[in-house]
Amino acid sequence: MGEYNSKAMLSVELKINEKLYKANPQRTDLGRKILQHSILMIDELGLERFNFKKLAKRIHSAEASIYRYFENKHLLLIYLVNWYWEWMRFRIELKTMDMEDPVQRLEGVISCIVDTAKRNTNIAFIDEDVLHRIVVAEGTKAYHNKAVDDQNQDGFFLSYKALCKKVAEIILENNADFPYPRAMASNMLEMANNHIYFAEHLPRLTEVKASGDVLRQVEQLLLYFAWRLIKPDHIADWPKMQGSGKIPSSNGLQHS
Image 1 (cartoon, one colour):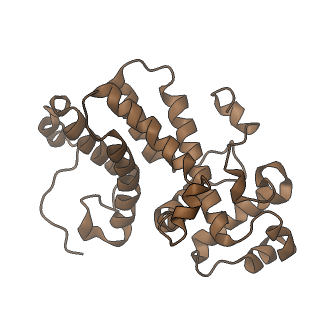
Image 2 (cartoon, rainbow, N blue to C red):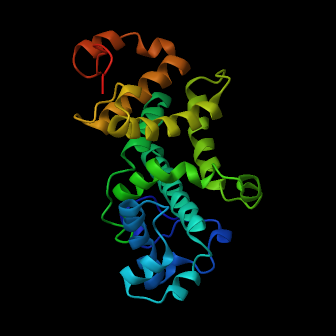
């Protein structure tokens, strides 16, 4: 995907499965406008209420012009989720490429899993913060559907598989005998999104508090689970870290 620096992202397009679109939206002004405003509108309306007619009105274009890029809104959603997965994998590659210590590399992975949600102004047509909210709220609809087996045959989820493979490889760098690297990788990715959602909407399902720094809390949650399972001796000092305030303590169940 080109040189790994922030300036490169100005000219590098992320590779997305060509079967998800009719014309590459990253290569035209209209295509980029479709991506930009579809993200904002899905976040605003939800996928069920969002449609191409409303999008066309928002971007002052003909509805037919949107269909020249995407067959339907479900494929558009899968495209957006794939873009997010590819962007996260790119950031993991960038962050870990000069790291040799496996511990630092896995901590870098976890940091990227969490902070990929932050806005990157180098990519004007994608608001990662808003896209992340869509991934959290709507992302599982990309592969929890009746057509998932056919879509899998068409390679719609190769980006997610490649991301999980990268994370799994770094897990194995820390413990070559760990028996569930792919399961751990996919669980870390899902856990990050689930607990952000729980903190905001279903607080009794998590210790992550919406009133605090949610991303920082989720990062610590992932670190604890990762090291507890992969390298238990690495968290021998966890109680001390918890007492120092770096790690949230469990002081009773939430009641809301």
